[in-house]
Length: 591
Image (cartoon, rainbow, N blue to C red; front, side):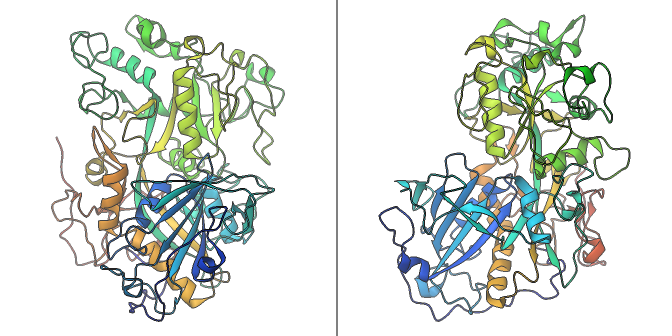
């Protein structure tokens, strides 16, 4: 992958000096003292959208992966916002049949422990790196509460651990961070960074402050609750079509089996203007919105009823059949909290946020609980009585992609859940049909390939969110993520080399292919992640994506991709090459 701002590539060296040691656990199902003494530890904070990349990238087990095959143990707390992975390093000394020879020889431990914090999203992969600060991670060294262990087809074991910030957490400065967009997107003025964070606008990287390494291209998409997807199919396909839920030929089988409901041909569509209208916030308080909340209504959206969408002489809410009709026409939006890279990239792609002074912000949080986001003065501090009477959409700001899944699931089912990070209870009516709501949100495409969640992705401007459409330039909603590390905090040369090898592995085409095959193979096509092009793995000259080694011909970086020319997701993506004489790469024209 492109090694932007590093100055030198990782030296390839044969691992030596370590003896193979089995990972063992104590009575609390935590790594025991002997294991920890023989383990290199790194703390990775940031993007929840790319959590699957980290998780599956560690399990690849080939010579491109840092973990020996079959040795990865996963730790997680119940919401999935705090995770950790311990494995044997993929070295000949550990008995690997396919060792990663780029693991630095100066790392003499047998094992690797990677803490991964999803809570707070990409902002936590930027702010505490640029301005070093301790943040909480899962405690695997002295957690007083035993973890429960279970077998897994993916991991050597999965252990679920209690998590409470006062008793089950440790505080550390992240070793490195991961964000869905480049750090300069996380500004206070754009509300991508919480007020009070320092600095308000991340400065450009320098050799003495922090450095950026571009990560893979990540496909994102707009998702609707399943009943809303069905309503859109009723509105957009005639009754004579098997894509219309009222047609006898319409099939919707469990899971990701082949059916009409979840096929590419029957995917409903939202155009970019419609999406922008749903999610755009008023720039200033507007009457009568001011009177409907005790705090100023800055950030309230204009579209708040699904009946505002017209279908012939009717409207979307009244056009749909009873089986898919929610208990109220109120628009619900499952969004993310400030600091989310998923939210930041959405603002860039659909609203011009950050990239232009005329861009809009994403509608702000106002729901049944309306928990104020830290440092934000324009959020209703709740709870709100009769929240759906507000002349604005109900916006549920969630802390991670997993929480957003919960939001969409429970609104589609009308659950009266009172636990978890989305807990509607009976705020929208009695459990069941009365409390069902149509909701829309944004997620990365490594989500819900199994169709086990009650939401579905839609086409944007008639184009499905696949890697092929990203590469041919027709699908717009993708960005290049970035890894970053603080130069002064990562001063140990051996640890730095280990971190850079981890980053390199996560961006290798064969590793990304493995991740996509296991997380992003949808009924409408393969999506997920694409490697950035370079001389080691250039994009195909045909403009087609090789799913066995996916490389994006497009990039938000500008040749030669250093300093001010590094990844900037505000730039229109163009064909990228490390070699200005390379005229082979191109784009595939589509009808």
